[in-house]
Image (cartoon, rainbow, N blue to C red):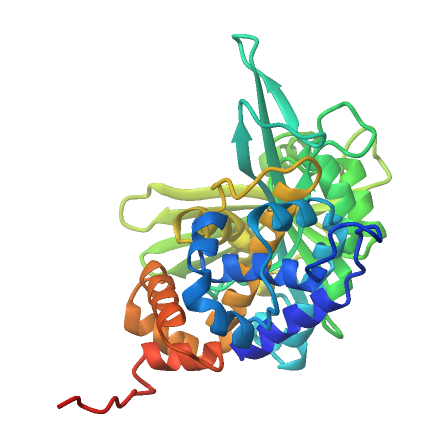
Length: 427
């Protein structure tokens, strides 16, 4: 399946209209520039310099596996990518995720009936006290010196019972064109939420999982406008005041169950008024606690609001889904930063969109890897043989640079010893 995914990426890049003006540096096709950068992240090279240094020994495999006809020099690659609008790269997630639907992989990733859970959260990926561009977020230190940084809001499809996560979209948190004020995560969410349904599988619904930054009236109304259900962490506000009064009067509904050596209990209420400013908006509330059955110690507790109807029979799955929000942090951001993807490394900053485009291309490479991890038996066998992801990436690079291969599938099969090369003995 891995080669189908890489081919889908290439087909998407081929359809992107070239932004460069006639008469400019058009020696390299835009799809070759994009695919070269994608290959760098797919192979987990730590820098563009390393990618270029290994070009001679891996050139034939770049042509065969990534369908690259020519790789531009560092400056040409960065300058070309710098002018590409992030929106055309964001659209590539949809093309890749369509293959997930075509393969029938959504069926075992649904929750609470026919919902696909999309966890949304932000992270930083670039910071400098020297390099800046027109889209940089600017933070002034106590010393008066300015720091320049970039952040990204990611939407990631998660499932509480599965280790894989599928990046759904990525929105740069950056100064918008013509604006002087810093951008923020909530503004990025306003741009991202309307796009959530565009990769939706037939018959499925979106269920957004969000942290305590998002239970505002305008955000809930935006989600409703775009037919998105939600489970959002809540830490303060009028909903909690109402829930506390109901708890004191014994009016909250309850349900309990056991998980191993722990006791789980949920309290909930429906149709609570959101706030004084949004009295026309009602939400459902539930609070969860997990207690050690032997010691009585509370191991976990949290409260959420949702627009899903609440009942006893969905409570275990509802809580598990709500708690799976953390996968956007642990299974996505931590993986990208600590397991070979080098999210926080500086591949180049540029003057417009370069640093954001590098981050989006890295997310696309991560999406392909996650789908392969979920559904490609040869990826799974190679990973099992290598034990860790870092070892797998290193082994892929070694084979890629050393042996001529017709596909990435062959590389995985070679790593897992599914394919054995028989070299003649020299006398």
